[in-house]
Amino acid sequence: MNHTSFIPASWDVEIQSRVTTISALLANNGVDAIRVFAGFTYITASGEVMYFVRRPIGFDDAPYVHYIRKPEMIPALLPECPKRLALKLDVTTVSEYRRLQNVFPEAEIVDSSAMMRAVRSVKSPFEQELLKVCGKHHEAAYRAIPSVFRPGMTDLQFQIEIERLLRQEGCLGLFRVQGGSMELFMGNILVGDNADSPTPYDFAMGGAGVDASLPVGASGELIAEGKTVMVDACGNFNGYMTDQTRCFCLGAVSDIAQKAHRVSIDINHRIAQFGEGTPAKALYEMACAMVEENGLLDYFMGYSQKAGFIGHGLGIEINEAPVLAPRSKDVLQAGNVVAVEPKFVIPGVGAVGIENTYIVRQNHMECITNAPEELLQLG
Image 1 (cartoon, rainbow, N blue to C red):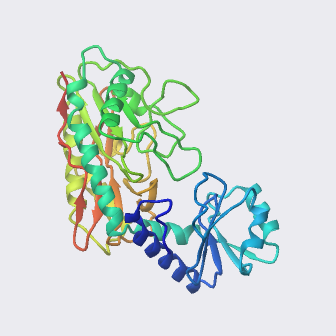
Image 2 (tube, rainbow, N blue to C red; image 1 turned 30 degrees about the horizontal axis):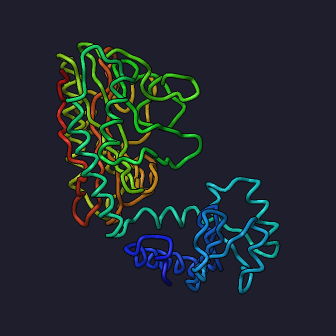
């Protein structure tokens, strides 16, 4: 199979490898075929791939690409219709599901969400290299953050300058988040007590936002003496994403804020010593134990509203598997990519802590976001 007519040649072997992996899973689960995403990609248990394309034009020379106006055209283009068809039901709407049921009336529809989540959680060497490139650009932008601060700035003004740094570094500006109704524009910049503003999103930190229609992030707070500035801006430079949080302050902050920030760094470094075969929930429990030892539980992962995790997988989306949470059943595998974000909110001061993106190895985790971790002074 040659995909080079519509993607870079370097991706061809990678895509064939993914097709082989998915086909084997389909065969093992007694499924004839799977639709991976709306648009439509059709993969069979025997390894055949067909693309049913609405837009864009230009793929006519590829024998496995078929242009369609509507899904009802698909059955006539298949050698045979599937008896069991897998759909990613976690992202398929009810109306789309019912329509495809009518398109394939003889097929049993099964859910491939868990299967695809597991496949996507282990990144190939090819994907890992893309993530490392992303991490280097992400780091470069973060190292320049103190240079764009000016006295009298609000969080929103500072965020605009940080976004500019990221775009100049090559950031694509779009961040995909796994899960319903979770949206974020380039990042989350939190100053002072705005970090404790509750949000409906399942993010580690909240923020009121500048409008109720997007209730997260910067709210117009002045960056003032004794307050922290948490910068959690995602990196997407090639379709794969890294997550990195660093904290800054203007003037001196309280001893407890400095202590909590140090504990966050220590937790990251401790977790990075574990590798393949480690239960994800064990890392969450270890982090909580370190927090409790330091008397910081009241501030951990939020103050008024707390997040129930300290880390998550990521790749082409934020919030992939595995998740570091108390009830997680995930076990780390080599090739997992995990963002670890043990954070604290100190009333009257703001949020502290760091977040790094790691690639899981056999006996450790490799950090690919290496901007300075200490609490940095602005101005």
